[in-house]
Amino acid sequence: MQLRWSRVAPQLALAPAVAVTMVAFIGAIGWTVWLSFTRSRRMPEYEIDWTDWTRQYARLFNDGGWAISLQNLIILGLGSALAIVFGFVLAAMIDREWRGESFFRTVFLYPLAVSLIVTGAAWRWIFNPQLGLENFLHGLGFTSVSFNWLASPDTAMYAIILASIWQSSGFYMALMLAGLKSINTEIWSAARLDGVSFWRLYIEIIIPMMKFTFITCAILLSLGVIKAYDVVVAMTNGGPGNSTWVPAYFTINALSAKSNIGYASAAAITMLVITALIFLPLVLITAWQQRRANGGGA
Amino acid sequence: MTMITQAATLEDAANALPTQRGPFFPRKKKRIAGRSIAILVFLTICALFFCVPLYVVVVTSFKTMDQIREGAIFSLPHVWTLEAWDHAWNKACSGINCNGLKVGFWNSVLILFPSLILSIALSIVTGYALALWNVRWANAFLFLLFICAFVPFQVIMYPLIRITASIGIYGTLWGIAAVHAVLAMPVLTLIFRNYYKDIPQEIIRAAIIDSGSFWRIFIEIILPMSGNILIVVLILQITSIWNDYLIGVTFGGLGTQPMTVILANLITVSTGVVAYNDNMAAALLTAIPPLVIYFLVGKFFVQGITAGAIKG
Image 1 (cartoon, chains in turn yellow, cyan):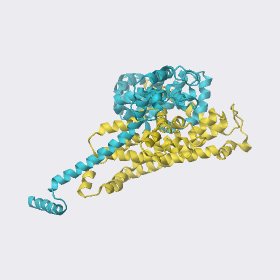
Image 2: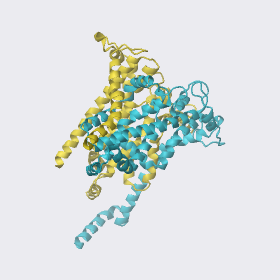
Image 3: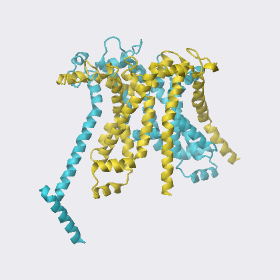
Image 4: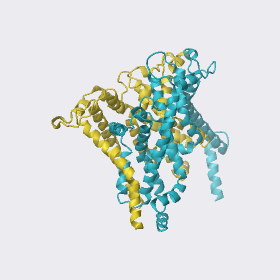
C-alpha cells in the first residue's frame, strides 16, 4: 500500500503544475497558432479558410511597421551587445583590483533592481532637449553637441540602446565575474612568469577560456532583446512615428490599439519562431561543446 | 642554488639599470600601484556614469518647476521641497483618475502577496516532487518547463486574457496575481528542482521507510533545509513582480493598475505642461521598495537574478 501511495502522491502534487503547463503554455501557444491562421479581427473567429490560411503572415511581411520592428530588433541586439563587452571590461577590472570590489559591484548592479519604466523615465528626462543634458552641455560651451536623440527617428533607437546598456551591464558583469573567479589562479601566475603581455593574456587565454560564459550572455541578451517592451514604452512609446517599434511592441499594439486578434497572433508566433531560431543553435552548440569537453576529459 | 638565483637577480638588475635609475624591486612595485590607480580611476568614472541618472532623478524630484525651467539639470535644488513628492503620491493623474500614485502603490502591494504565495507554493512543491521522487515522466516534463521558460509573453497573452476573463478574474488584482504565478512557474520550478536534486536519495529512502509520506517529508525535512533558496526566490519574485509593467498593463483594469502602469501613464502623457519634478518623484517612489531590498540584501538579489536567468 505504502509503496503505491508513494507513487501516487507525487503525481498528484505535480498535477497543478502539469495543468498550468498544458493550459497556459502548450494550450495557449496552440490557440495563438490557430488564431494566426484565421481572419479574426476584433472578435475571435475559429474558421480557417484553407485556401488562404497564411494571409495574416503575408500581410505581416508586407507591413512597413513590421519591417521597422525587425530592423530595430537587430539594431537593438547589436547595440546592446556592447553591454556584454562593457560588462566584461568592468568584471576584468574589478577582478584585478581587490580594493572596492563590493562597492563597485553594488553600484554597477543597482539599475537592475529598478523597473525599466523608472529607468526609461530617468533617461527620458536626461534626454530632454530644452532642459536636459543637451542644454547643460550647451551652457558649458559645447554648442555643437546634439543630445536630442529621442526627438529624431534616426537617433531615438540609440537612446533606447544607451538606457538598455546602462540597465543591463551590471548583470553581465556579475556573470563575467563569476566566470573569471572560476579560472584557475595558476594561469595568472604562469602568465606573469612567462611575461605574457596584458592584452595577449586576455585576448588569447582568458576570453577563449570563458567562451561558455560568453555564450550564456549572448543567449540571455538575445532573449532580453526580443522581450524588450517596457523600456520602449517608457522612453518613446514607439515614437517618433513608428521609428522605435520592436516586435514585442508591434504585437501588443496590434492587439490593444488596432484590436486585430489574427494579426497580433501572427506577429506573436513570428516572435516565437525568432526566439527558437536564436535559441536552438546556441543551445545545441553549448551541448555539443560540453559533450566534447566531457569526452576529452574521460 | 643561491648563487644561481643571485646571479639571475643581478643580471635582471643589470638589465634594468640602464633604463631605470631606481632599484629593481621598488620600481616594479610602483608600476603595479600605477596600474591599480588607473583601474580605480576607470572604475570610478564608470560608477559615476551609473550614478548620474539616480542623482538627476533625486535632485529633480526636490526642485520646484520654476527652477527646472532654468535648465540646469545637475544643479542642486535652491530650496529643497517635498511638493513634488506630495503631488505625485496624492494627486498625480493616470488617465482621468487623479488620485496619485498611492492607488498604484496599494494595488502593487495587494498583487505582490497573493502572487508570492501562489507562485512559490506551486513551484516549490513541483520542484520537490520532480527532484526527489521517482516520477517516470519527470525528465520530459522538466524539458517542457525549460522550453516554456523561454516563450515570449506575447505568444500566450491573448489566450490568457480569455481564460482569466472566462473565470471572472480578468481586470482584478487576483487576475494579475494569478498570471504572475503562472508565468513564474517554469523558472521557479527549475530553480527549486536544481536546489533539491543535490539532496542524497538515501535521506528520502530512509524517510519513506520511516513511514514518511510525500507531504510529511516535505514539511518535516525539505522545508527546514530550504531557507537559503527560499530567500533567494522570494527576493527574485518580489523585485520582478514589483517591477513588472507588461502583465499589469495587460491584465489590470481601471483602478487595479499596479504602480509601474500608473507611472508609465504619467510619464508618457504628451499633453499640457509636463511637471518633471512630479514625474521624477513618482519614478523614485516606484523605485524605492526594490532599491531598499537591493541595498539590504544585495547578495541574495544577485544570486536570484543569475539563477533565474540561467535556469538550470
